[in-house]
Length: 629
Image (cartoon, rainbow, N blue to C red; front, top):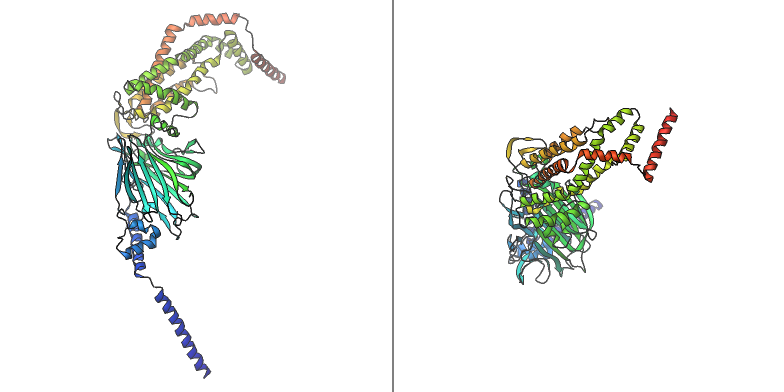
């Protein structure tokens, strides 16, 4: 009996457990709205997978989720949207929830702002063309750029603004065009991107602000601003353009820096106030009045060195930056600016935001020379002269100003040439005693009144000018697509012949200006090296080898450089050769120099304290050497 009772109780217990489980399954089964939401999510995941598998174009690097659009009359779809978007499902039910754009433009700039994401999906510079006569787009069809805020909500969702729909509204502020893009939670609660475009200006006022979202945005989670851009090709030489394509930024209240040509992954800086994605002659910049606490930069080379030489290459580099945004009283409030325009020193400097640092004019004294001398001077000349002629005139004036330095250098070389027989005699006499040879050589220089360093110092004085101009011409936006003689673009290489093959380090074309510059350098070095050429000493560089190597390096190095720079070096060396011929044949008389040196030898030479000290040290060293013997 007890055993049967136990079996009956077990059966009743199992029946109760089964009933409870069945009741739980019944009461917790998904509602029709939840079933619809799950269906939408599944379709979205499948579409994303298919999209990722089918996407092969290197220019379309912006990966987006499927945006949710619902009919406000469809309660099931609206419920599904709410399950994914929470309070922001309201924005998906508005008439603006479409992949449409609003266009704002002025005389120089045309922008398209997409409802989806509320960011600039197209930036066209109206007054410029690429090397192949196509309009210059810094952003085209939203495929090479994205702008996104990633944030958490109080109902535990993670949302991306690039997948949500903003409501556009156009208005006017005097001559300024204003576009307000609002991502709405309700009519009075929203996240707003506000764009204000002024006439004839590349700078766009941009504001990010929220209203009434204190209870919607989760303040305990980081809000990240992510901006990405692929640098598309605008120049004839993609490799040359890529050389000047990198990220520039300002930090710590006015300091500026750049990432350089290499790849960077998560290179971080603090207190950043602007970031510029620079593409040689065109730049996209995001500026903020409230410094980003930190900013992480990423720069990737999309095309390899060999691919950059491909005529069909379209994309060179990919840039990305991520910055955390901070809430103020639970709301976002950032006053910013967008700049889409030329990398023109005059334009960038006019904003007084330190943006001129984006133009690579050289560091230290080199940048100072360019800013306060060459840029205004060349601007003055090019105001009434063709650009190629302006380069020649500026080169002539620079060489004339530096001609006294050239004269001093050549005079020193002439004196050394007069003393060469006596120096050779000293070298032969003391060939086994380097110390004695040095003493007598210095004594000869002292008696003759010749300073062997006087020929080097003038050359050193020219280096700042040389290097400043080396930075100036490749950065001069004014030279872009300006022709001169056979060169159709002074900012790019001049091509007189296309080779059916590629020569390593040289290229697949022949540029004439570098050839002319190399010939001029060879003639110049022949004149200067021959002036002081002596028998090569052991351990000393072979001057004849250097004389042949320098023009050859010029020929290879500048074949792909801006023809304006090669034109400058050609004219500069040509003028220098002319100046030296005048100095040699008209101004300097070697017989008079020889007579002057002989007179100086006869005069008692008063030694300074430094010379006396050096003489004493050399004599002591000689004495110690003799004692050891």
